[in-house]
Image (cartoon, rainbow, N blue to C red; front, side, top):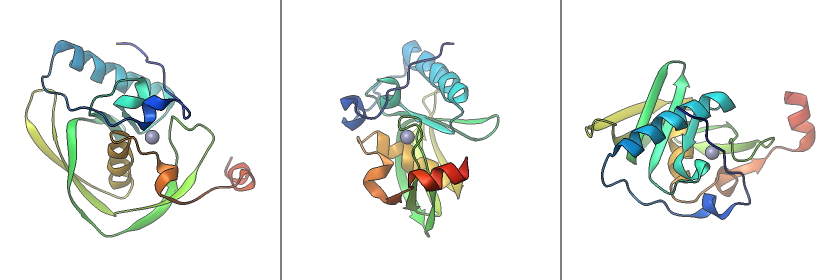
Length: 158
Ligand code: ZN
C-alpha cells in the first residue's frame, strides 16, 4: 500500500468527467487500497479518483472508523429530505462551506469483487456520498455551496 499525492484546487484534473471502470483489474484493487491509505493519512472521510489524479469512477469513504466503503462506478439511486451543514474537501485545504444536501441517500455501486451493492446513508454519510460522487463529474462543493465560510469564521472554528 502507498500514499498518493492529493490533487489540489486549480488543477484541471478536478474538473474532468471521469470514465467508468470496465474491468476490475489488480491495478484497480491496488488503487482502492492506496486511496484508503491516502484518505486516512490526510484525515479525510472520503476520497475520489480525480483527487489522486485518476480519472476513473472510483470512490472510497470511511465515515465510521473501520467501516470502509469502496465504490466503483457509483450512482445515486434514491435520495430524500434535506440537511444544511459544513463541508470541506482534501483538495481545498483550509476552506469550508455551508452546503445543502439530501438527508438520506442510497448509492448503487460495484464492489471490489465485482458485485453490485447498495449502500444507504443518512447525515454525514449521505453528505459524503453526494460530495464524492460530484467529484466524478468534475464538480467541487463550492459550486453548490450556499456560501463559503469567511476567514474569521474559520479562525473561530480552529
Ligand atoms: Zn472533496
